[in-house]
Image 1 (cartoon, one colour):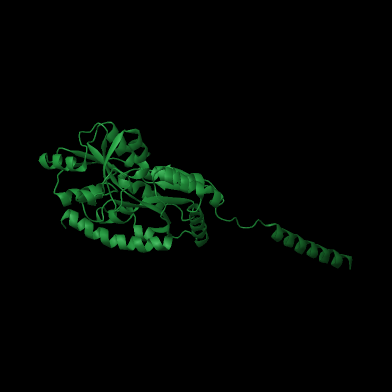
Image 2 (image 1 turned 135 degrees about the vertical axis):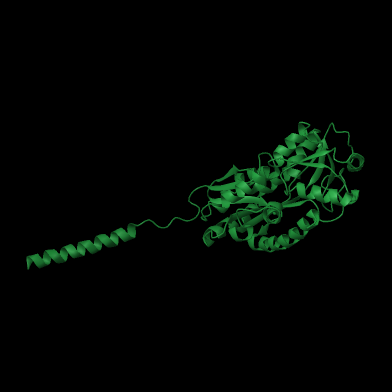
Length: 323
């Protein structure tokens, strides 16, 4: 009798302990529970780097975690892109890319990743028009003077750019094709190094986006000869169409990608954070100080545009390479 009572009591205690253990088990942590890394597959000082510094300074308010920039230049952006493609699809490693690197490179290189299958878009931040720039000491006062010299001296002028088939190489090649010019296109590991080459006199001209040139223009270090777009970025600088270069030339979209297979809850949290970021007054002010616009798109909206870009870039590459 006593033995039966003891056995029954022990059973009750065991059940009670099990119930207590279950109620005390820690709840699954909500994403994100640690800092998120934003990989930029380009060098320091370029427009992506400058934009990212503003993004990562404000978005922790809405993500509830820090976002850390990691610059991984190399192979025309492929090194950093592959790093993210090979990262765990857990939402903690993201890619800050652009349309030329994302959708055009697949038609000129044998990539170690598939951009359409290995990534999903989180959000487009904005898009920017490129400008043709020279050093303040350059003899070229206008875009037409640059063109005239290039036409009279084929192959003599050099242009520093951010990488083959990148954001400046492509519009430069399009301009050369349309105006029947021959110039040397010299690749650097990103827009920042290309800008340094221009400022040090290693190249005759270059291209850059508003975030990288506004302060240099205001300080008198560079001269802007022409800018992409249908509207003037700077009141005293003509658009490419005004100087005789027609067509959709010189636009770069900046956007965030995550590895394919990232959990839906992480994707949703990231998309919500970027949507809130776009409404943040500090973010808007800081982007304005760079001369950058804010033109957000959701991941789904940008995916539609990615697919359209893929088709258009295949045709463009075929046109530029004569294939």
